[in-house]
Image (cartoon, rainbow, N blue to C red; front, side, top):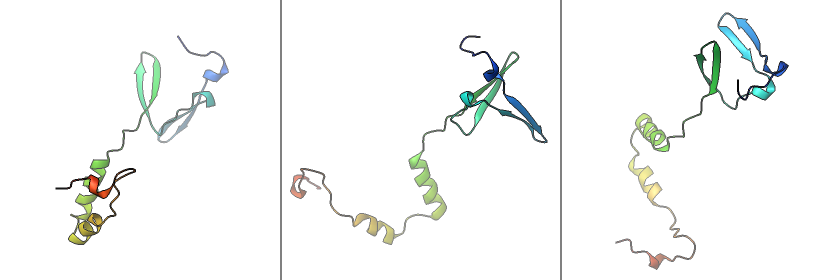
Length: 98
């Protein structure tokens, strides 16, 4: 097999319990993931790290609004009463808000 190391580093311990088997990977094979996708290729068992989906910020806000209810008038007024920050090099009269 291409890219496969030989020697004792290729051996992983199998630990059996009531829930199935656990594979204890040697340090050089550790994965930077919380979960793995598992599949068979002929007699081989293939483990692939599951990459987390990018955070859905809009979805998180919509879920929060759905769970807590719409924003009340006090919240909206407080949110709109924010300091005017027009960025570096810009003045208040540079921007036409009409």
